[in-house]
Image 1 (tube, helix red, strand yellow):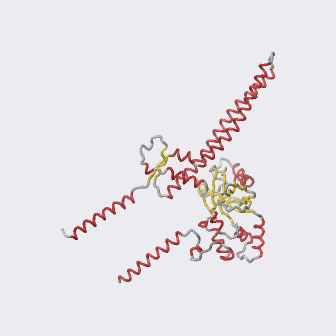
Image 2: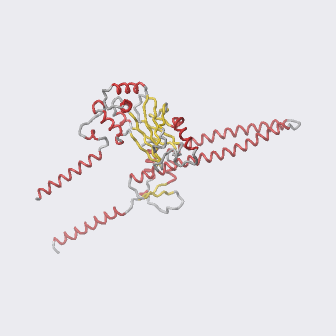
Image 3: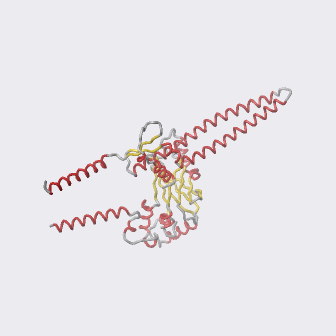
Amino acid sequence: MSKHIRLSAMLLILGCGLISCSKTGGKSSFFDSGASFEKVDIKTIGAENYSQYVEDSDNGLVITKNVDDVMIQAFYMPISYLALREAETNDVNDERYKTAFDELINSNLQYVTLNIVVSSKSDPLKHKIRNLAEIEERIKYYSFDVNNDIKLKEGEVELPCVLHHYERGFGLTNKITLSLAFPKTANEEDKVLIFDDKIFNKGKLKIKFKKEDLNVLLNDQ
Amino acid sequence: MTKGKYLFIAGALVGVFILSFLSFKIYTPKTATIDIKAVFNEFAYKKELEVELNKVKLAKQNVIDSLRIQLENINRSASAKQVVDENLVEYYKIKREEYFTKIEEFEVTNAELAASYDEKILTQMRQYIKDYGEENKYEYIYGDDGNGYISYASVNNDITKDVIKYINNRFGGE
């Protein structure tokens, strides 16, 4: 009997230990499986695992920041991930993927998606407006001028936002989504997205993508 | 008394000690104080916007100075003439009006800009202090602004330096 109790206690301790280990690991599941990857390569781990890895906020490419009633989320999109989305495939041998990847690599740009959400979960275009004309002003600002208030800082170099696209929600979404592109450099520093929020008056909001999280992606930034 | 009784009393004392320690740990809220002025003054975003505000003020001051020099020149030209030049006097009046209007306008816009900057700084500062409190499991962080609302706080509970470091890291994108 006492032997059984001792065995059960040991199993319980082992179980607790395993749970705590799985919680402390910073990287996503296939990094915890015992195999150690120095680089995340889409060809080694497969497109689905790769997408899962990139989208997992534990891996440092999707970062959220709350300030007061506004939440911003920045997603540093690696070229392979973008190519998968553009080609609408999960097969890295698909010609559409290869074409999309080559085009993106040759563009010499790096891409970030920025989402802006307000805490009331209402349409940010209508959040705390004083009159209806403000909605049009916000649409115009996000469509044409917001790029002037966004930079990507690498070390001491501030890169301008050279392309941006505002995805119109037409009242059907509760977030503002901006697709941003910055010149690609050979710099291997941390990358800090600087967004000077002029609409909700939260000021300069910064989000840091750490170099160790970026460098883990194989030839893919 | 037997050995067993001694052991029982010792055990009970240890038990009481552990229980009181645990209840102290469980029921005492974790609190701390910060020097709110020091946190504000050392906040990197405050320093950054202060520089920006001074640049704007300086640019506006240059416009004012230039208008003042123009006024002085007109005044000098008018005084040098033997006969009163009505056109010059009229021109002087217009320029003087413009000078005072600009001063008034710049005072208002400077105050509005400073208020807008303060709002941005305080919004972020409040958020990061709140995040610090939550991350470090504080129930209360009291802001001592030197106005006597907090009459005494132990130095051991002063977390000003840690908070300054934390909010500057957060502002930097961490």
